[in-house]
Length: 104
Image (tube, rainbow, N blue to C red; front, top):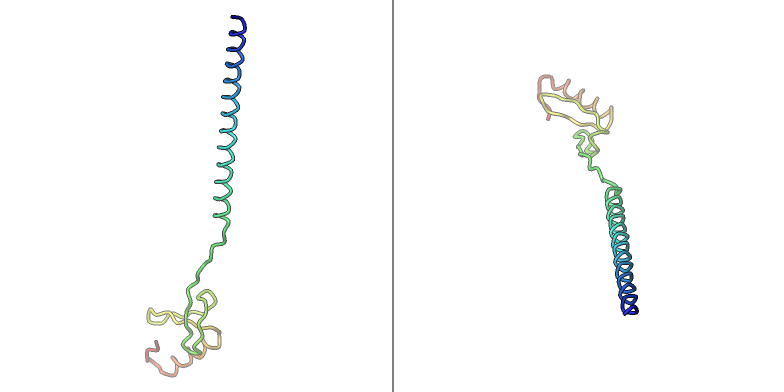
């Protein structure tokens, strides 16, 4: 009878230890999955963002350029874009020569 009691105690301790090991392994696996998800999120966030800038057209010389690099004149509530100070000046000279004419 005593051997049966010892056997049952061994089985009981085995089941307890086995359960603890499985819980530890599940915890470790869950932590690893969370770390992988976090790394994937960080990699996705770290991807470069391409900023698309509005392009404008200089009607004097026909050049297309980014709006941030252009010279701008507003005339009759219309914006005119220029690639250089010289093109801007040509536009102003043409408006002056035309007098009251509307250049668009």
